[in-house]
Length: 316
Image (cartoon, rainbow, N blue to C red; front, side, top):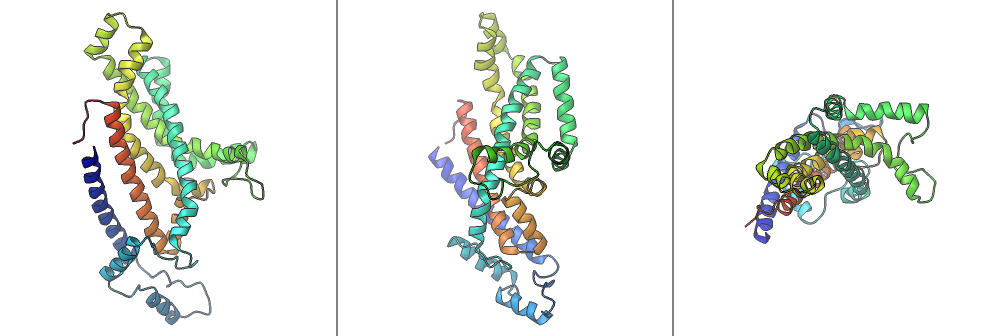
């Protein structure tokens, strides 16, 4: 396992290098400089050129990337072009909010999706199974940020039972229930992608496992339904979930910008979207690096869980 983790770590570093190279090139070949639309009416194009020279934007692209990579190696992600704050500090401020929302969505997705998928598979073609299948199709067809906006209008504006946005009530001392109240609706909407995926996969896996010989043998031995379900059916049905969970978490984090913007959630996604509007390259590159690193960690955890769930899997 140790050798495997070392090998995967080296592969992840190479992949991060490729991702950052591609992102760096795409950001910097985009038309216009971050200072081309300088907002100060008294500033001239010459002032914008001076700023571009100061920040090294006139250097050749490989030189710019080399300087940025050298800074990253020293844990320096640069400074924002507009706020002059270190990018690593900006990320440290926003990362906890994004992780709270994404992990809450992942956990809720598992809590909702696993029972739905298993029950639908156990009672195939029942009314419950038909309802779950309709919900998964409808849920995948509706943009989740749009559904969140509709819920905000109806539940927040019309009924007033959920806050209209934010992570907590301003000018109020720390209150766990207030945080949970603000987290409830964003977490439920964020979890939709997870439970729709889990329920669909688990339904098909449960149906397949139920048709296996070892399940029929277990029933023929007189084992109870709960023993067959938890010891044989559920454990083997959960194997694909360990594989797709990392991808689901990555999808939740990468899809955070629209959801965070919808719910005014102070996370990395919203900050990345605002930085993209301003073409604030240091923030965009820093966010890209962190999100790519989280993705690699997620897939590594997925591989480890895969081996834990399925004892036949061994990493050398």
